[in-house]
Image 1 (tube, rainbow, N blue to C red):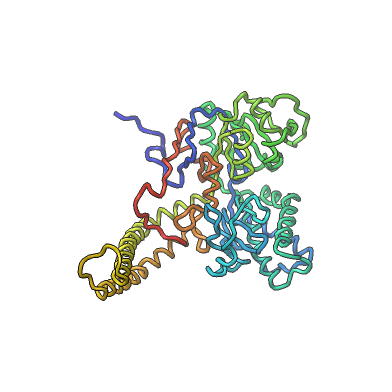
Image 2: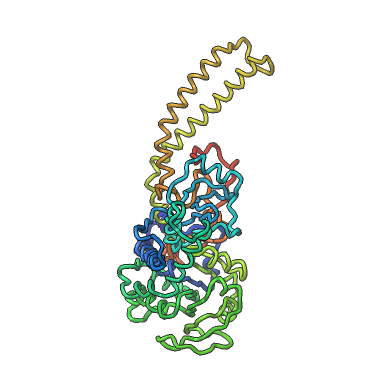
Length: 487
């Protein structure tokens, strides 16, 4: 007689609740887990948060006399994983090799030929300051404002701004100023119900990890007052009066990532709720909160080597890449938009099955057409092996018939292919794909994140004892025709 499983765990998690693995990770061997806060433990209603960030930036530009009064935030203009080309004033989507597959100039989609001319000899290199990777959801307001200001620049309405790179500098400086002044965070703290997307499974997921023997560490760039406010709002109601601090063995605020991982910054202990500080020489004490500090000090204080620490964050470079590069910490990336993508793919499965079948037919017909074309060539020019008595006219007649069938088949394929290209976002398509290929974002995730998932609470479904195995890597020769559609 089998034992009843825990509520909600009787079936495997749905796709949007899964943890996906690039590099095999045995969670049983992980002794400590570090978490970022914003868009990792604390999720926001994205459109509301980014609309306010956009508005603060817009207000600053208005105060300086720029003609942005008619502009409004459009969350569909861009998405995570796109890349700003500050040299040409474009927003682009590139595949894993860095080749641009879709592009907008300002807010206008570029026609294929215009895009090809602009990028036929260009490969996106994120190490070049020309390119700005939209790799967190905080970048959506920035990319929207940049695209709109490019339109104004082209209309010669941005007096004194010299070039598309200066347009980007204008956006970046004013958006940074809005964040630094704290007005946006003050709005969020004053009305968290409006901005914060609560996850009822998050506290139970962290409790499972903690009671399974993991040391939990909060490492955030946010200030103490904001961290305390957001964490209290998100967790205290779920913990029966124990408070959010009871979940974490260490809390580190104002961590200044990525410098947290690459420099030996000093630590200061936060001694009260008002955020008063005293120097913290030597080790960090478990159960306390600190400002600053560094990754080496965390390792020493926990007594745990880097490869037994998992760090989970939403920023590929500030959280994931740098923690792996300097200290060999294992890495987990939170990709919130993955839920929307996986749900879209799930609903598209019947259409995708039909599309795959039609593409397989097309490949078979194209292969026969190519063989007929080669046969006609050999008959006409009188060389090579060919059937006895074959008539050129009959070969060409079959070619015409087959071409007609291919045209008809393409007409059946076209609406399915269009729908596939508009999944998740009607302008940019899927987050992690460009046609059949991986997107540049997918390549960065594959390169830097050991595991990735849509939210931290998905650990609840996998349990603290899961052995996450990376799938066998596929190569083009591993299977037959894929039946996919290229951009």
